Image (cartoon, rainbow, N blue to C red; front, side, top):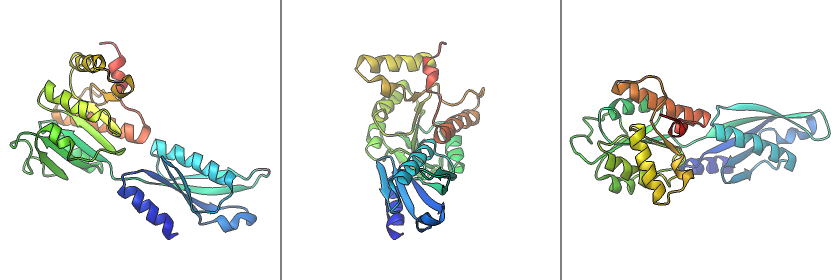
Length: 260
């Protein structure tokens, strides 16, 4: 039991998402498995249960689905091979706190920081201007970094629960930030800008040999299409898109492939 919780704690500390499978019920000849656990991570299955292979395999499959979809806690029943008996399992997630990394301290970033905090994200704001990167401007942020964007990239940790929003003051710095994060493990990368401007950046990156798989990760125009106009509305649309990615595994990256 201690080994399971130790590994769960370690997984969270390493910013590695995991699913915990608990056997809750079963036929009398498998009652010894009740209360046993398996830990499933993107790297594989760690078995603490002494469960039969068929149960481990099916539990791992179910846990993998829950982990990919970032579902809430779920119950499942698994049929015992060769019989009608069922084993009940409970799957819960052990996830690092989601991190919202905002490049740019402008007028959209302020409401986005507040909404992100309310949604349970650890928020970091980066800007190279002291007047825009300070605690007075972003009291809700967990961290405010004032330095050039290239330098900031060496200061922050980007992992599978990191959601990145690029809303700097200019095309050049937007592109600089984008170049720095496209190869990361971030769950979401969104960049503000008109379709024409974004297509121009993508065209340059393509000419330089950037792989299409990396470019397809860009969510731009950023945010869900809710008709947002004010900074607060735009921030809300961005957060809605990030929640969609986190909970449903999809965002708005297809907007780059549409006409217009």
